[in-house]
Image (cartoon, rainbow, N blue to C red; front, side, top):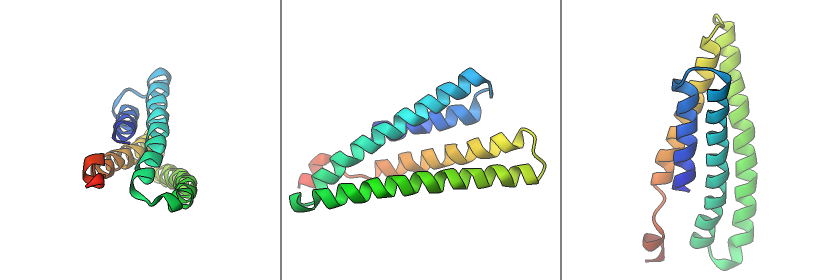
Length: 124
């Protein structure tokens, strides 16, 4: 989970801070996608560790719904940021606003992942 969050944060920061050229944006997008996929897989392990065995199915189903909802809301939020930046002048600020949003959210996700107790702590 932590590895995926870190890779996502690196991808978001690459998209924000690196030159906005196609190869760099593709690399940042690939890191972002790989990090999200890794975090999603890691979240299942966290759920299996913390919920009773009889509730694993329910918790993983809720996790799938939450991921889908988060993806939809995240895409809509970034689209709103792009539209707002375009309405206020456009230009390169549109991409800077979108990439800033992605970078902030991925770094926040990294900090949230740091709050997940280790397996040793959960077992105790």
